[in-house]
Length: 154
Image (cartoon, rainbow, N blue to C red; front, side, top):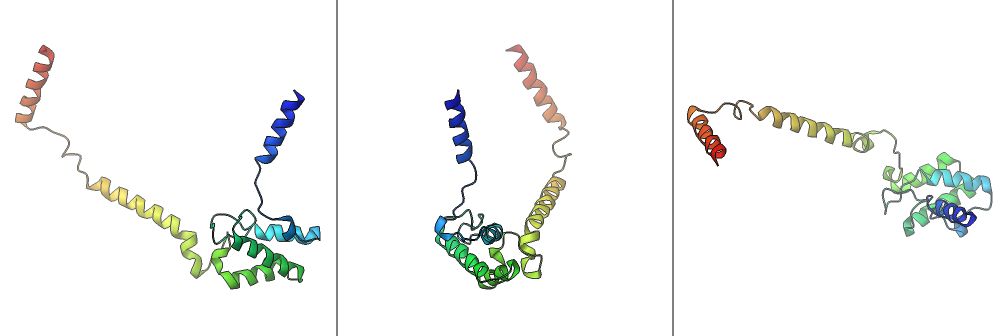
């Protein structure tokens, strides 16, 4: 039983998020490393695009982690370090870019696509005439009655 619990605990620990930060990248001061870790969770890997640089194994993400840690070790505040990286790589590098004119598409693009899709569905549904699928002509009713009559007799 103990062995089973030990295996379950090991699997649970392995199932957690994997960080790509290598030990040689980490800062010696735990407070500075905590700041670097917090900031690197807010930066996007421009190769992987949907991962933070902390979670990415890409070479560029490693370079960004090193640059970030260098800036923090040099005495930059969190804001200064972020501004340095954003100035170099653009707003796209931020996982949560600020709401500005050049980032409006990032913030409101999905909503615009959803609204356009809704309008398209509404126009399509309005164009469908329920009367066209409704009443049958006298000839069609007679033909249908004949088909049903033949179906019942067989």
